[in-house]
Image 1 (cartoon, rainbow, N blue to C red):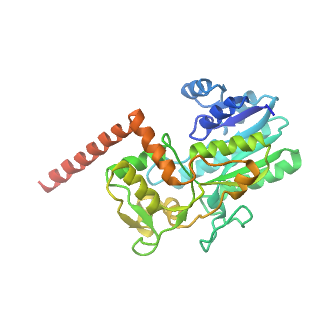
Image 2 (cartoon, rainbow, N blue to C red):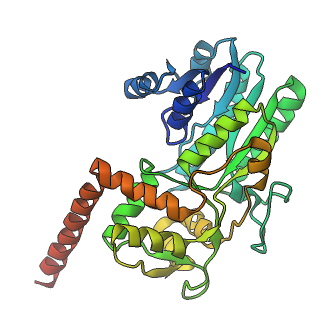
Length: 340
């Protein structure tokens, strides 16, 4: 059934894929953008661009029309610094919580609301495998995601719309900021595997998902007018050692070294260190069954191969290799100067 879909965060790694795929399926898509470049991107992908900010209710009142039937809150403010401060994480929390409240308050009568949560909100304390029925155990990093899940549950009951929560694994994609940084650091020999235990030798199983596959799951949820909670992840959990080791092999980069989580937190922060050392093994069985979704990249091996092949074709790989050589040379010159 065709409908008007409003996408907040329409220019992000997930959001721009949603605009592209939903318009291809015949939906009228309105994409929220914060600047001229974002508006141009939304228009180029076939959507209707509107300028606004999820933290500014007045702008949303002007941008969300009464004919919007489906709302997707894909906006984030994930910190981009190497060691994010609590203030940086707090802004992402605001985008999740306040952003969703503002969007719901500005919208008219909705048929469906879709929210990208994270699977690690239900990470089990003992590291065991879990699914959508497991109890949640939110922490500092995931409390805001759990709060939005609860908000949607309450508002859906009161206002009569279907609420679909798609908990995603760790995103990776050729155009994802983190993936590019990982590639550059691996080529430079500067991305150690973070592990648990005193020496960092204890590996945690993590759940990943290619951003293309995540976007396809969201489109499937809209098409099926789904409600409930779904885990959108690869078929096969992977340790950070396996993921980054495979990535390094595909890039013809040095094998990653190791660093224990207790030490890594001084460099990347406690939230990131915990995220890499606490297991999140889960399953996508419900999404496959109820959404009719099937990942194009069932495991990280095929997905990372697509990343590297894309980079090779568009020139990114050559660029990253150049940057890596430059960074290595810069460090060597600095070491030489210090020793002299």
